[in-house]
Amino acid sequence: MKKILNIFKNSKFKMLIILSVLLFIYTSICAISYAENVSTDIANSVFRLHVIANSDSSEDQKLKYIVRDNLLKYMNVICKDCSSKEEAINIVKENKNSFKQIAINTIKEYGYSYDVNINIGNFEFPTKSYGDISLPAGYYDALKVEIGEAKGQNWWCVMFPPLCFIDISSGVVPEESKEIMHNNLSDEEFALISDNSDSQIQFKFKLLEFFTNNGLITAKK
Image (tube, rainbow, N blue to C red; front, side, top):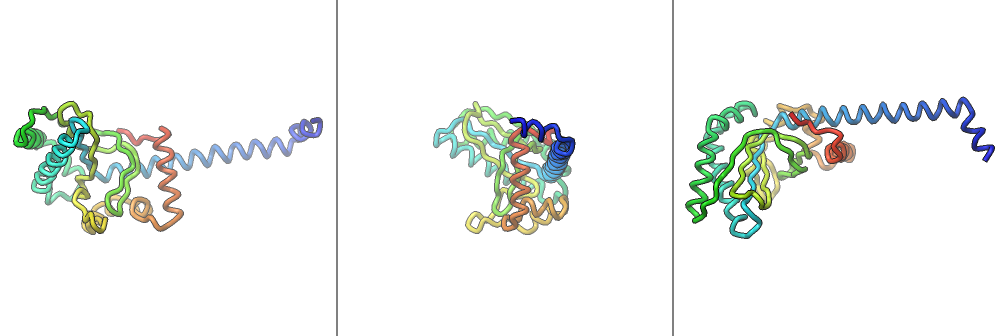
């Protein structure tokens, strides 16, 4: 016991402990700062869609997908020439009432009378994969569509760049969509969401997920 106490009294050992703690704090701050900057940059490059069904019944879930398809068809028409996220958001804001009316008309067409609540804002999303692109959890700008009581399962996708319609059979995102996203990110940030073969990249993605899921970063606006 005395030997252990003597070790703790040793000035060199104390200095080693202090330096180790300072190194840990510095490394943690750097890691959190890196994760927060990357999370913010990724969030700033995409505009997402979030559709919530009235309930988890098979009928309401099927209706959710029909509403989704009609909204995306309209989105692809009015935003087909968009070259930036900001432009896409502005167009959606200008046509917010049209999105709501399309959803309501679709619901009525299939024999339901649910109301629809539509909001454009900054919302929390879980980690999601779209083909060979994976977006980490965090807060993203999105068009949020709530059908009826909005107590059913969610459906998520990316409206800009257009990742909603991917080749499901091959799980590949169109190169044009990747190029748009790449233009708004650094090479490392783009690799972070698109390269699953590099172990270092996988570690950084997991690090980003860890900090986000534990509330250490939010990238919330």
